[in-house]
Amino acid sequence: MKILLLVVPALLIWWILRLLRSSSAPVDKPTTPPVENMVACEKCGLHVPEKEAIVRDGRHYCSEEHARETKS
Ligand SMILES: [Zn+2]
Image 1 (tube, rainbow, N blue to C red):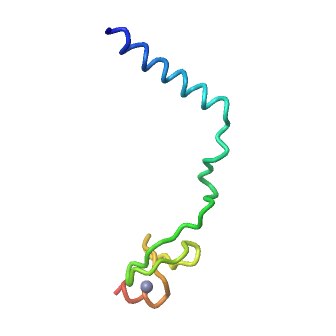
Image 2 (cartoon, rainbow, N blue to C red):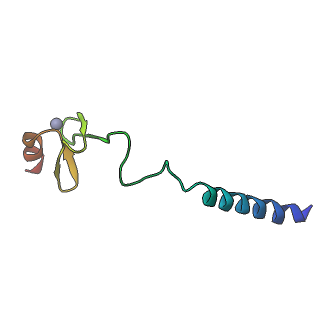
Image 3 (cartoon, protein in one colour):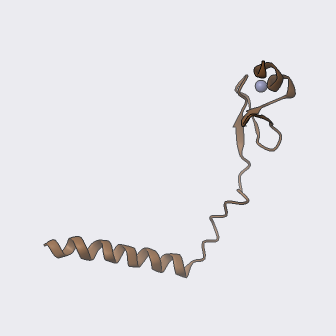
């Protein structure tokens, strides 16, 4: 029974390695996410697309006004 504890993980690792080699992972591309990333405004909580958000000190804001108001 003890041998199963060695054989099963070994088979799993072999199977995962085989999967990784056969498919060159076309789905996971960290550089370009398919869905637009939404961020919440630190001030009012409004969700805006990340590329349209104002970023101040690593925080996201929906507008210049909110970025300025929270800074003080
Ligand atoms: Zn806001």
